[in-house]
Image 1 (cartoon, rainbow, N blue to C red):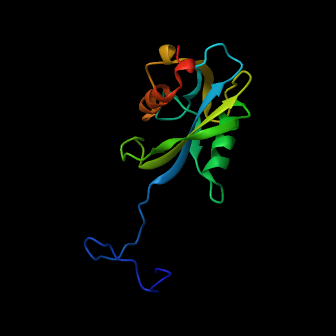
Image 2 (cartoon, rainbow, N blue to C red):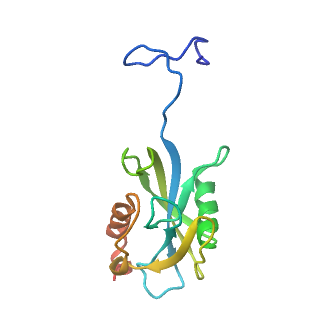
Image 3 (cartoon, rainbow, N blue to C red):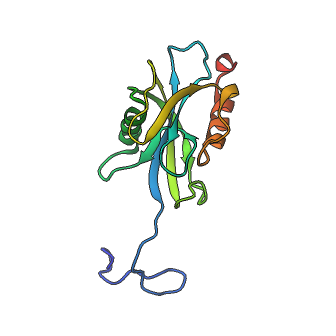
Length: 159
């Protein structure tokens, strides 16, 4: 039933009753730059313990009742043990194939932090990379996200 009409929800394409919604899952990812490192183009990545395996930006699913900003701060701390300062919105990425498990829509933020990242939650490792030292096996569409991030860096922050 829909709240507005009180009747069943109908598919706009075929007219059949919709019994199960198939909406994308909302997620966040966060690009963390450590301000106490000499390389201005550094980023923190985590090595995933769960499929899809590989290195990834810290991030995860938005909990019910949580804003995407709250999710980003929570996931950053859970996966890297870093207290981040949010610095901006990088973008929203929604290509249906960006996550091989199911359709997700991610909001990507940028942030800064200080200290040594320490893996936690579902991260096996947390390490600092630069544009020139990124690992080969990067999960999801995070290589594309990072390429875009590095293109947007001010010239003074590029190596």
